[in-house]
Length: 608
Ligand code: M6R
Image (cartoon, rainbow, N blue to C red; front, side, top):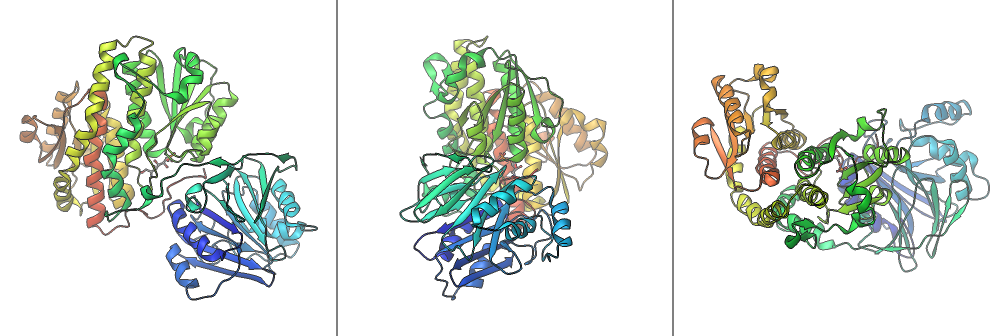
């Protein structure tokens, strides 16, 4: 949440900062700001709304300064106003701070500073940082930042500049990521690599409770209690072409249409068809411990949580291990009994979600084996888990998660199969699953080739005010995911329910204005689902069914049917979710919503 970029070198900082902010905008987009400095002083600009407003505000100005920091905000403390936008400064405008995270003891610090005569200009928690830096500054910026960070509680990723030391950025991290980029006589600071990959592929990640002093030709890393740290640069592998929208009008649609490739990438080099098993190099170092796990707890949030719920069914079918799925935000506060016989599997696209990160830290403290299933390479969860597997799905830019969900489901199948083949899964069962998996990319393309069916349905339904999604077993989490997609991008109220729960309450909502999307593929619960649909129809509720090709009976029961190809039961959610993603996309389109950047949301949720 919120994005940071900083530059110090020989080039004009402003265009680099604006470019970086555009790439970071998916992290937050309610206001933006930047400051550039040189020995003559500072130029600060702050705007409400998108980075393009900041771009307009500085266009035509001759900003020659070669050092600066910038920020795109997702408001936590104080509304999105110009005064609350970062960078924040002290009253003399010498020091400037951009900050991600939350300063939990800001009220106390603010009261203290106010009693000393400091005048605050914003409602943010961040502003205390800059006044403390001003107050504690004696010899140089780094010691003032160090002393300040020792006083604050909570989380921060910060970058700080001082107009009196105009070729230096000081940054620090606790809980919110900061990465340094090393260029040729220039250095970058950012909250994630996407902001700087166009300039350098040499990066260094700060760890918690570390800070860095960055100048055009050098960087020094040390702990917040001043112990020097030696850390080599890492080379990152990032395909810039994957980031563009191509011919698609929105990232979300592009990412939905990428899903057959996403599945291929998730499988590449990992399928061992002859052995009916998989090869996941990232788990290899702990495979003996993994084989003996008695329990796996999956922790995640949002769409990744729904993938975890599907994962539980997959692990139950393929392994002898008992599996729980927990919302990371709940898990971290539970009284947990974990030891080395428990594996805690963190699923996260970004690898930075605050609650998921806190959950695996808690699990490690208790002695559990931590396993990551992460998309962003080098992210904090990827680095902090004992072992892990990457999705290799490329950047997901749309705030609504789509292609990562299918990637996560493929890898959960591969993980469970790897373990299951050491347990009770037979060779032929493994081969059957992998053969079916091999068909999935083509089947996804087939569904996508009929996207216009979903567009037509969306045109019919986009004006409704509520929608229900139902499913059973593996399709219950798919129903939850369908509801999440619809509500987050189209703002239509939507609920996902286990179909068996209908008679325990939600059916009272049903009438002709309250439609239902029912995932009713050919599986063990098919007949029960059909009964649920009939109960809804009996109360005049319109029903769209997502059903298996060849199921002609369902057309007599539902108002409309969207067919998906038949596949192995454990793989069905990979196919059944796609019509729901498309339906949400087109509803949002017809409603004129900002699809890739829905209101109040950010792609990466790095605060609790
Ligand atoms: O990066 P993560 O997978 O940890 O993110 C988890 C959720 O924040 C994310 O899935 C969110 O719910 C999406 N907006 C859903 O589309």
